[in-house]
Image (cartoon, rainbow, N blue to C red):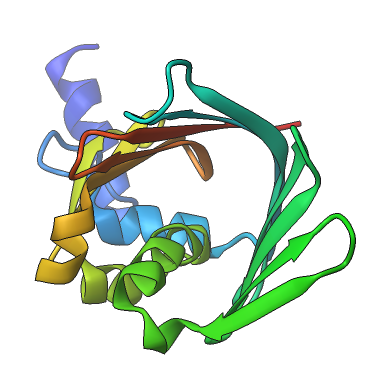
Length: 192
């Protein structure tokens, strides 16, 4: 393209109000959250591998993880046994295969609240809630991103060293939780 054609193209772009892509334009955590906030619900199959110091072999499970606006998150484990954890509003409920359940308020346990909100707030695109519990750092780009979440509460830091939620475009692909004692949980989501 010669200089005259290039200048003409730039002038047309400026006069038409089009934005000209530049190296200075960047992608940030607010843009990621806005992208994630657009989906009214999510449902994915998951596999989870927990490496615990008390076990010789990693514990593996699989099931379905679902999120529905405004605030319902459900982790339904199908293997090795049927059980579910449901977070809705300020309540977390555990259900087993025979129908027994127990519930508690999230506000009564700051560590549990932070763990629940790490996933729920990410899927909701709710940055203020994430920042209530974590220092949030975005790595990568729009196509392959990761949120590095470091707890800001001392009680949480004594239990969880960090969380890393990674994804592509508008989907969460992995959730990696490193506990302070070295135990680790890695959840991988499969999208259809």
